[in-house]
Image 1 (cartoon, rainbow, N blue to C red):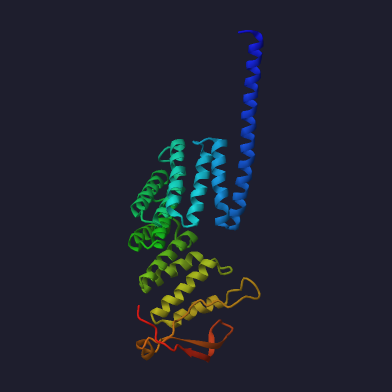
Image 2: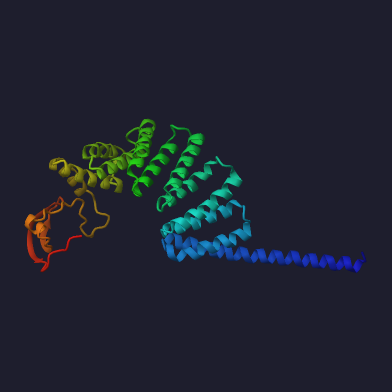
Amino acid sequence: MPHYLKFMSLILLAYMLTATANAKDENLIEFNQAYSDFQILTKQGKWKEWLPHAENAYQLGKQVHGETSKHTAALAQNYGLNLYELDRNKEAENWLNISLSISENNLGKDAPELIPILMNLGKAAANHESSRSQEKYFRRMLGIAKDNFGESSTRYASLQGGVGRSLYNTGHLRKAKKYIYDGYEILQRVLGDSSPKTGNAAFHIGKYEMTHRGYEEAIKYLNKALLGFDSGKAMSRNELTTRAFLIDAYENMGESEKATQHCLAIGRMKPAVEVQNYVPIFKKLPIFPRVALRARITGDVIVEFDVDANGFVVEPKMVSYTVSDQPTPKN
């Protein structure tokens, strides 16, 4: 080949490499900007606004890192989680599966790094018709956790509790029970009753039993939860919520004196700010007059009352009331 042709070939090659580098640099700059916007909106909880940024970050990241990169897998998962937050669960499941596939190729099918992706897939699948997929994802996730951490590990126990709560939140109450109880028993055995993790697991059992009106069992586990939450310092949000549930449970069991103890404990809690609105921790529904109920008559009542130093309602009195002119139609 003549020398001038070789020289021209080198110039062309150098130009192509420079153009490729410049394109990659531009993609990287655009990617960094898109990802930065995505992170800012994430922290602000602006789900709708961040959706296009999450998708843009994935598309640009794929060009910068390649389709099979672990970074691309993470970006696909971010986009899937964004869709999940917007209740676009079927789309979320599809994107999370993209993340799962890339991660499997990079890490193997039994890698513990797959656990959060499978958990999110189960949650997404739980919110549409794909209930079988949901169980498939959860079973696989727990299998990986069991193989990597052991059946008696706190990690495995926490994941069981997470599965139970996800099933509970999507209305699969019977399936939820086993996971919630099994997770608690492992934590109680390994960490003891005074651990906050055990307390949290006991709280969710109490919450589950409240749903089924199993007030006696609810009281048992909610009191166990207090052992994990009571640090002897200022009352935590977990302790406050647990005591509020105990008030409800004791009232439904007709044990008002025991309910009062927890009302007083909450009443002694220091407010988060010096001036704040009153927030009821227990509300008992009024008894609707039977005559009005049979006649399907509705109405509104304005009641005025004082709140004493312990947070109890005192001296309630009716200010005004209105009655509907027409009975409420039957459904």
